[in-house]
Image (cartoon, rainbow, N blue to C red; front, top):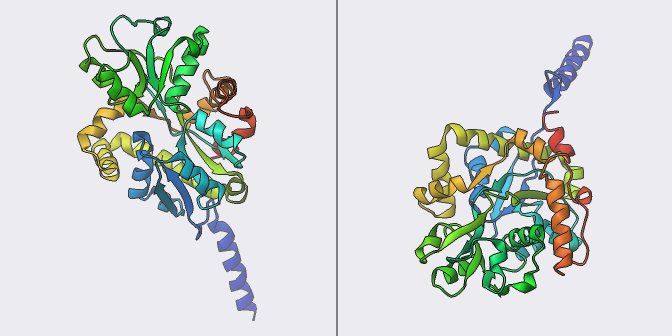
Length: 330
């Protein structure tokens, strides 16, 4: 009886010790998967790498990835609790999501456009002021619209002074190359193709103004009830970013396969954005940074409210939860 009691005490001690290593509590394996959607933006390829290389498994976490390129569908999946998080949305879509009443929080950033988005223009349009009276194509409510609105607001230029056409970014780029519009707000590969039109050039891009970060958001109940799982998810993503640095060729092949692209197409797009590692995130989520995730979300809310795209602007402090990021290794 005495031996059984001692054995029982030993087992209890080992169990307690097993969840603590060097003073840090480990994330226990979870049987419930974390379900997230993402769209086929090249930066979101980091999730494909994290899955393929088992970085979430190493954290004891199961992750179900769903590739959904329709924001309305992702929003419906999140609001109906069919997914736990939406990956890679930019500030304007985050404000729209908050305005719709979906309870969610932004917890970190994965990447930021660094030349992938911009305005292409014909010869003779060399400044934003030169757009007045010209035909400009872009997609209303999109990241392109945010980029344009942000720039015009800085210069105090009214959108009403420009002849606008509502088209998707790809259609806008194609329309410009075909000579149907004077300028377009679009993304790659249309920025590179701008010179296919005589005199065509990039007027300004996110390399000049990096205001389009990809911001993963989780439902608030998931953050409250499964904080260790969300932190494990983030650690897996940051581990994948480290892996890309030391294994770029294999990483690009994983992205190419996942998006049905050639490896060269992936390689060509890599320089147009950059992934944000843990240290980048700590800086970006500091309210003293310029820009910060807080200032961008607040500014976007003001712009979208002015344009009538939302009914109310939600303060960044009500949308962002940086507590898990700042306690990631605890």
